[in-house]
Image (tube, rainbow, N blue to C red):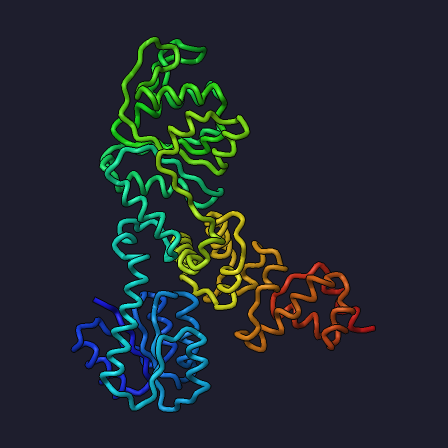
Length: 456
């Protein structure tokens, strides 16, 4: 059943439309103004928003902008008693599904609503809720991630070896655990090891175990991870870093389904699904002679490529809010909002460290700020100032925010010359220092020096 949000600041039209849509079988919620609507939209994803155009302080076009920015699958229909050609053109450019002038014909509106919901359902077929619900620990709304999880769902009833590729920080271990949790081995254990973190001798005993007395310090027998994962799954992370000698031993395990503990002359049968992961291209390593071709084909039965965060930027708002909520609660702090200007920066940033970098940024920001709203300057301890300045959308800033960013830009460019900064801004150095202090901006120039400049 489709979820619809009706936004209208006049009680009677809002209630009439709500009753009408509920009779059609839709789940309908109401918002009495734009602020209330945005609050509801932060808590829930709607299939359709039907909103009045003229409202204060947030109008229908602003609701449309926010919807298309943070939840592109949601369709928006605008209603207004003050319809103009300019309004309709603006609405369509911003991504509105349709635009109706009041009083509207009920059947025409209902017909548009049905078409809009069909379009929304088509999107949901690509990013369907059933697939999303099977993987509650993976936060996403992008089509590219939906494709990854749809593939995982398809292989849930197989024991095929999987090779997960992707940059560092993309969540390869999370994907491996999702594969295990939906497989027929889910009642068994999943164990993991970073193969690149250990030398050969330690890696071999970690994977295959050893018998008592097999080497100095082996005072008792030890089971390896393959034995611990019997009936379950083993994740071999950073598989591209293992030596040629270990590649041979691992190939034998994959071929025979048997391991031999260090120091033993007996083979032990193991029933384990192998998932390998690498931030390197194993195919390129094969071409370079660094990785065995036969082992590569044994591992690459089902390849899964995890996209970088810059390839799924539409997931950034969901991930950021998820991490804000999680870390604020962990630190026993009130959960802050993320301002539009700050979210713009997060969306546009390239994220070389991917999801891990985003989570680390959010954790630091929550730890260092006590504001109820995360602002761009709250991100500055973790972001280069140039990122903050270049990515600001001044069209959506207040006058105070614009002044603040302008001062930040000049501090970045002329940080050790307050007299020049003041001249560029058309203010006195004393006024400059007062504004730096009031906006809590950082500067390499001591306060006394700036104030002395003002007296010259």
